[in-house]
Length: 129
Image 1: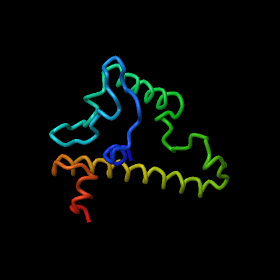
Image 2: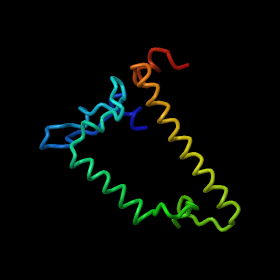
Image 3: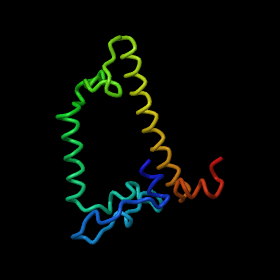
């Protein structure tokens, strides 16, 4: 979603780093031009450290990665699922959807690197049917 939204010109107002005079709109999200990591290379090191610290907090404290069943006790849209068979099925579906989403983003990145166009540009040119 981030790549598609940003490529269509929808960005946050303001600065991602005032000290570097870097606005959100200045960050390129595509992998075009040999930039494997896209706009990540444009974010200052302190900003990347903050992002990684947030990821670490979520992974280690709030939703530990050592809990392999995916049940973090937050329920399903605020409701607890009582039937264990239904609960296991929903957790498995969520896990598979996450895997599919990761593959889709990776495919988008490979397509951008191979063609030199963002997803929005390819769609606009009719290259994607």
